Picture 1 (cartoon, rainbow, N blue to C red):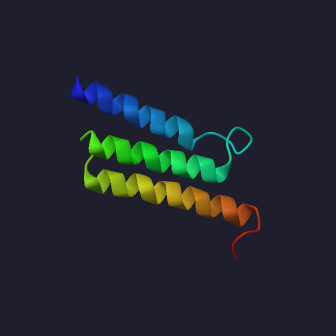
Picture 2: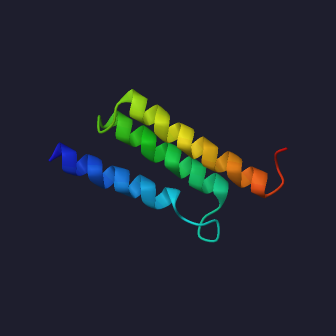
Length: 73
């Protein structure tokens, strides 16, 4: 049961991660990913190392989005 919950939570995280910017604002997407990662860690569905990787992926996604928009350089 726990593994099924974990798979569902990770799938939901990935579904948000792959949404295009036409579907969701980059910052909204980033904070949504962080909230989901936090919730998964609190529920003991992921380890702190897995949480860190998800947060890093979300940060890289936001950073690449900012670069595409000319916000970083």
